[in-house]
Image 1 (tube, rainbow, N blue to C red):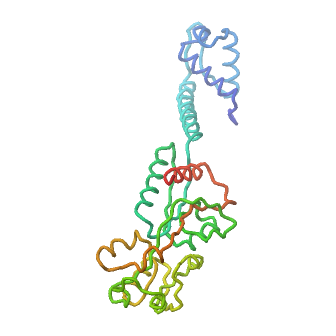
Image 2 (image 1 turned 180 degrees about the vertical axis):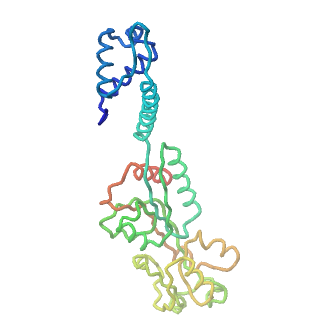
Image 3 (image 1 turned 60 degrees about the vertical axis):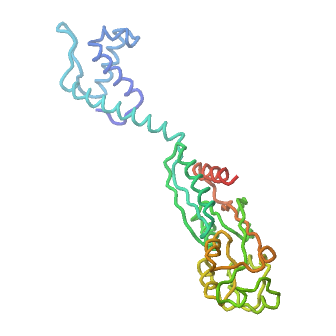
Length: 297
């Protein structure tokens, strides 16, 4: 009886199948390149390993025993499984597998989403079987998730102060200082510094941006982490605050927002692709990062 299956056992099983398909030992000599006596010896060895007769050969000719017929069915099933495994294992060798987790800042321009979509489309054209997860979050939250290695990559405006991260700049967006109808400066074409300092501004808690903001008003009774919150405060007509121009444009076109001293009080915010340098990326993460960089090139 067979215990563990070794390579020699597979060779003997294949020999048995060829002998049966050829109709006997003598007919199988040319197919196998072996003498009849050698085939007979190997068949005897297989029967010894199994513990039962597989075929009869004598004056009555060659025939397969009932147990031999049952074994043939099992052998063909085994070889089909081996062939399936071979094809699948060869396919996995060049295939990208696993998971990619990407964080993207909230309220980015539509062109940014289109480029991320282009990167996904390009990645899906690869030989892959990868689950992609997209997370929209504030920059501080994305940095936390990167540090915890719960994100592979993140696109956002970061402080660049995290030594644990690698950064690649992708694009920048322009931020203007806005007010809305009902605010004392909404109808003032060029408000002076004193008028601006009298304004109650919206504070953004992501601190590193404050040093870049040209308007540093001291009066501040509103606080919002997200763009939507900042917009809501501004629309109240009681506060001024910074918004991305792409986000504010439709509101401005409707006459519901107006930039204050555009250009002079505007500034650029750089967006980067960040990843944790201690997190060794897999092939899928590397390929997706390549496609992202190509999309933003």
